Amino acid sequence: MPSYRKKGLAMKTAQEYKNSLRSRNIKVYLKGELLNPETLIDHPFIRGHVNSAAMTYALACTKEYEDLMTATSHLTGKKINRFTHIHQSTEDLVKKVKMLRTISQKTGTCYQRCVGFDAMNATYTVTYEIDQAMGTDYHDRFKKYLEYVQENDLMVSGSMTDVKGDRSLRPGQQKDSDMFVHVVEKREDGIVIRGAKAHMTGMVNSHEMLIMPTMAMKPEEADYAVCCALPVDAPGVLHIFGRQTNDDRKCEGTVDQGNAQYGIVGGECLTILENVFVPWERVFMCGETQFSGLLVERFACYHRANYGGCKSGVSDVVIGATALMADFSGYGKASHVKEKLNEMIHMEETLYACSLASSAEGKPTASGAYFVDPLLANVGKHNVTKLIYDIDRLAQDIGGGIIATMPSESDLKNPDIGHYVEKYLHGIEGVSTEDRMRIARLIENMTGGTALVESMHGAGSPQAQKVMYSKLSSLEQKKQFAAHIAGLSGCSGNCADG
Ligand code: SF4
Ligand code: FE
Image (tube, rainbow, N blue to C red; front, side):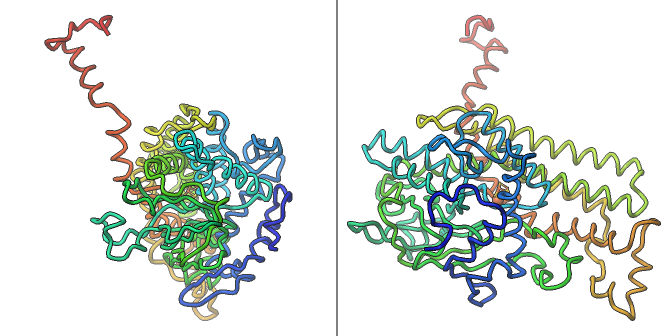
């Protein structure tokens, strides 16, 4: 039995987390090659993502971050990693956002574990409500599963996004029914599912995956309303690792990678589920179509509320890198640079404020677990799709064209031409050319390609947030406010009238 499946190991250290990944029998393809499951976490394309996720384990074992990074399980009363916790208060929700900002400041990138964290909270709250309405026992099943996750301090990949095929067609109308994950067989001992999940953040360095439907399903789409958990190495599961901007640089030295230690965003993959068996005790929704939309919404809102946390932390690093680049180049004191840096700070704190507000305004669900304010969560994520672009635009503005045109580390180290790179890329006295190149590469890494697209589409594309506004905010009420104040006929204009 793999070590991560033993019961009662409690909180893992970063090293224990990494070791536990080696005992999986996971199938991962990368650039057309099947990787060795024992050593794939050392692969240059994957190593950084593992280091980043490991930070969620490492910080939880420190005194300094204990309060942010750990919690007391409401199921067992034991101390657990916060990433396996079910929010018991608005304080928990706020701590989550602060925790995310703290980790981002240390990794400068995504540490992936929030997706499963949010999936577990969403499933916890929704299974309770399904049981209340339908007399099922999903919530108890889920609590047992959650206890297993908490006891073993597992990393769970939240798995929502289906590949969707022809977007103009509903799941049941697709020519190929596998475009949406669905139940193909119901057996006495469990279900068999088939399909694929796209953009799976942190999947290849997780222990488990928690599958959720990708959208609200109609009554005739019962096979697609499925929520269940399975190990990432279950028979029939395989993962195809995605490419990233400049990923081949990971096979070279550290300078040109920008963030050699932690990589870029979450190491996403395409996960194929080819007739995968899931026992009933791991099934938390199976055909209850009327709750599929609720599960999607809960998960999406929990995750969208994160973005002002993790992205403000990432922006702390971008702003720091930008300021260093300006200093290293001799224009750090220029007034327009200072003004732009202030503008960047204004935008990142706006993102943070929105996440804090949606958490502080959280409310208990019927299950007792707390849920974020959904409108503010969506506004926060929507801001990320714009303000991160503006922050990164200013970083590139101040950083200069050199972040896109610089010679490589190999040129710097070449015995024949290295002295030219050294001489002509040098900035102020006292700062080495290599340090200036490292900072330029960090800006390139954090503000371009894969990193930027993640801000747009991670946790749902902007349109997914926009559709929530009319649902969660009442235009009618706003009209009434205006009609009242303008004294329109039918309104007295006296606010005391209500
Ligand atoms: Fe967590 Fe942010 Fe990565 Fe989402 S994008 S998993 S919230 S760090
Ligand atoms: Fe994300």
